[in-house]
Amino acid sequence: MEEEKSQSKIDHSLNNFSIAVDYDHKATEFRPFSLSSPHMRAFHLAWLSLFSCFFSTFAIPPLLEVIRKDLNLTQTDIGTAGIASFIGSIFSRLAMGPACDVFGPRVASATLSLLTAPVVLSTSLISSAKSFILVRFLIGFSLANFVASQFWMSSMFSGCTVGLANGFAAGWANVGSGVTQLVMPLVYTLFTTCFNIPSFISWRIAFIFPAIFQAATAILVLVYGQDLPDGNYKRKITNNQSENFCSLLFNGLKNYRGWILGLTYGFCFGVELTTDNIIAAYFYDRFHVNIEMAGGIAASFGLANCVSRPVGGIISDKMGKRFGMRGRLWSLWAVQTVAGLMCVLLGRVNTVWASVLVMACFSLFVQAASGLTFGIVPFVSKRSLGVISGMTGSGGTLGAVITQLLLFSGSTKFSTQTSISIMGLMMIVFTLPITLVYFPKWGGMFCGPSNIDEDDENYHLLH
Image 1 (cartoon, helix red, strand yellow):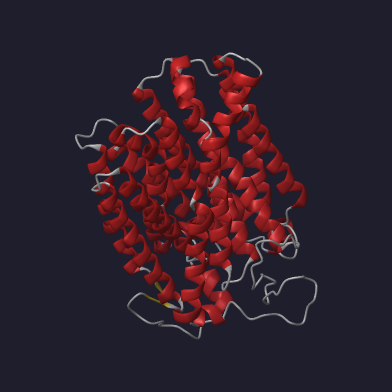
Image 2 (cartoon, rainbow, N blue to C red):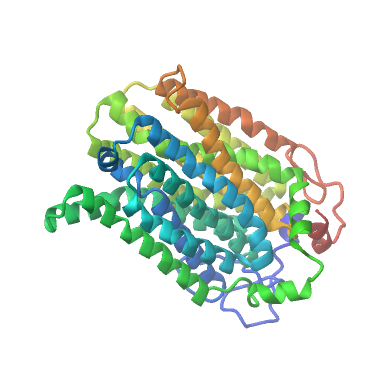
């Protein structure tokens, strides 16, 4: 439990903050319904900004039937576009990590949102399959704000609450992928029924809303956000001139723990993204429910993030307090393995309501595993936190690309239900490498620490 003790010492000597802080002025408590500055304000700005990016990225799927008819898209075009959106996210997440290390999460996040908001708006101008695929690829870049969000929370919250903060920020933000499934059809219907605007124009006008929403949240981040408890990131860069982009990047890339967490995240969050893409069609095709019910089922899977991912962060912090790093690692392995078993079962059940029940259980565990993963990330490297966050986040979207290509691209010989079960088996197998993660100061799943006397600050800067 040395991990928690070394990072949760509360500083009672200063009263500059309305929330309890440690000696680095990071918050040691989490109040999700508070707007106190800078910690809780940063939390709300981070999740709301990322929420808008998820809303924009997944605004196309609920209107896909209308768009497909208007642009004469084939199933191959739609599948390629879905994969393209994930590929864009891989590259941007890798770049976002070092960008946060150098410029700070506030500027990095707002800049990306402002650059991709016009792309969201340009969805209303597409006229061919190629432009459709290109737009989905470019909009996918906005999901790199996930890395900025997790980096920001790790900069604001101490080790005893960082898992909770990361879990809530990502969980509430991911709800955007479910909300857009409900809102975009309503916006489209508003224009077609209330204003009698033709369908081929209405769906284009509808994309004005997510573009404005994303740009507005970016401006809020710039105006009201703060990178660190004691100010913005320029101060940190001034005091550490020797830290440059290349050294931060190399320090993060050579840390094997970041690669393992990226692999693990690829088969929890990556599987979640793939499920978001295929679950509505799965219920529609296999159980012959109507399109409204299929959409409602798909939306419920994403909306579960409101609870399940924060629960993962809570479990990580609770287990960390009681058992140290060993508790965090064992919790991640156990929860993600159960999620894999639920995924296997999802492809095996043969009735619609049993499938909905299994899917609900699966969503809770797979999303909680994502929260548990980012309960470990802040402890990997303080020096290259952004790079490690970027590696882990990119692993999530890379996992989505791999599972989509191998199992759901249309070229596989397996049925969708069999592919879902195979995806569950892949989750179980690719969670096993977490047993190899070891911290000299805090230990691993099977071994205790080997260097408990090393100064915490030096440990973080050297690893």
